[in-house]
Image (cartoon, rainbow, N blue to C red; front, side):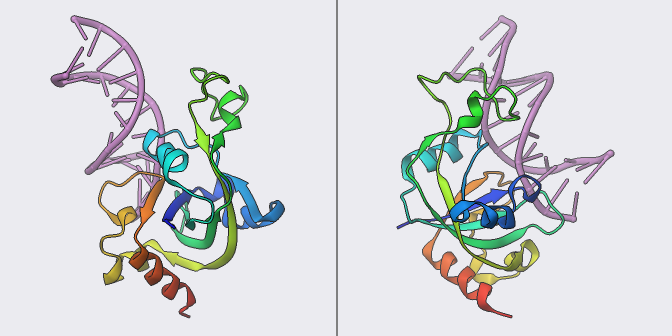
Length: 154
DNA sequence: GCCAACGTTGGC
DNA sequence: GCCAACGTTGGC
């Protein structure tokens, strides 16, 4: 069992949007970075833990606990000419972009970026590292536990 | 809007 | 394969 942090822009898909979807499950569309894709395609397993993170917004932070809810499959938006994520170079017989479904299990209070940075146990959390831009990063078990503990603090 | 950091592209 | 130019991410 592995753990992950996955960034989503709330203007695109917030944790509330995900909760409102059938089974609180959304396809993680729009990843167009090979390293992030490789995590979804090659490393993620169903039931892996996911920290749902809001990025590019007023209060960036971890807002939900989720799980990987499917095996990888082609991101349909890469073939949709009207989509912002359309990729003309990707062919249906050889899809370039794969995704997984993510199911939100519970919404938590927003553990904000400043709070994460102020937590000594999270010093090595990848998403806090300088220059990190990856939208999907692995999370160590000790970091997962520390964040769950923070989630339940008042 | 700014800008640091990083990824991708494409000419050579 | 190198690397400059360009595009994107994402916090502030």
